[in-house]
Amino acid sequence: MTPRRPARPASADLLSMLGRLTAQAREGAELQQARVELAEALQRELLPASLPVAPGLRTAARYAPARQGLEIGGDWYDGFEVPGGAFAFSLGDVQGHDVAATAFMGQVRVCLRAVAAVVLDPGEVLSRANEVLLSMDSELFATCSLLRFDPRTRELQAARAGHVPTVWGTVDGRYGVTEDAGGPPLGTVPGARYPVTRRVLTEAGSIVLVTDGVVEGPSFPIDEGLEHVARIVGKSAGGDPDELAAEVMKVADFTGHADDAAVLVLSHDGARPR
Image (cartoon, rainbow, N blue to C red; front, top):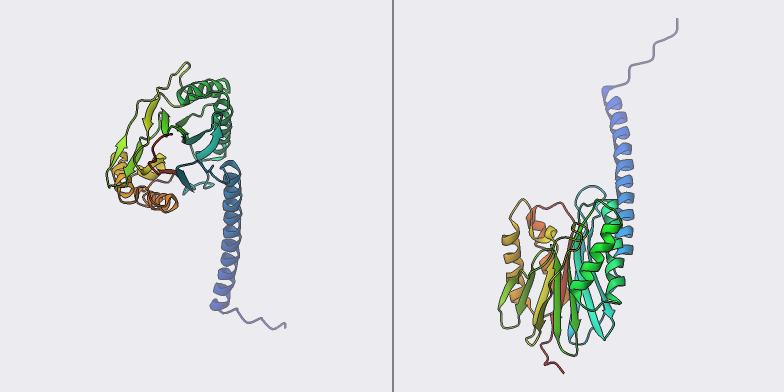
């Protein structure tokens, strides 16, 4: 008669099960980490490696990925030199936070750069970019703020396509939120026009552009978020733009928003135009 094998103790079965679960968890964590690294690499390739150096202007930007899905999205910032010795800066938000939104964001950035290379007026740049995006027959759209700064005249021209208002502050502690006239989001309305607001920056301070992921979410509405950012800008306007961008981005941690977020800071020295 063959002797019976002794039954395995319950603790051995438990340890075996825990080992399998640990291996599965490790595989899942490694897969998620690979997805995050891929998403971050894609986002880095579609955002500028650096911003241009403009006389009388210091710049900085921040981007934070979405907190769900592939952790990518359609928010962007950009800065580049344009004909005539001026500089253009854009910040915007493509609907959605997935691979399609990220790819469309890259197309919008390239489109704005291409049009701005031959058209000086920011409003006209947005109008022409809008028509190009409509011709692509995509279901996506983008909001955007486009600025043109001339370091010789210190003139700042601003055009807005359905985007979040601009926050500003001066070195003497004044601050506010400016909702300039604008047009509809890019890629939505054929023949849309975008008015341009012109200012001469004669006082040292900072101008801050944000996407809605920074200032709007379940925790508080956009008006409250913008006011919070404005108070931060009022305390640090004209200072280190990199530190200011980092402080503004922290607001996104309190909104409860799961979308991605972007911040662009322009700190100007207030020198008189030549």
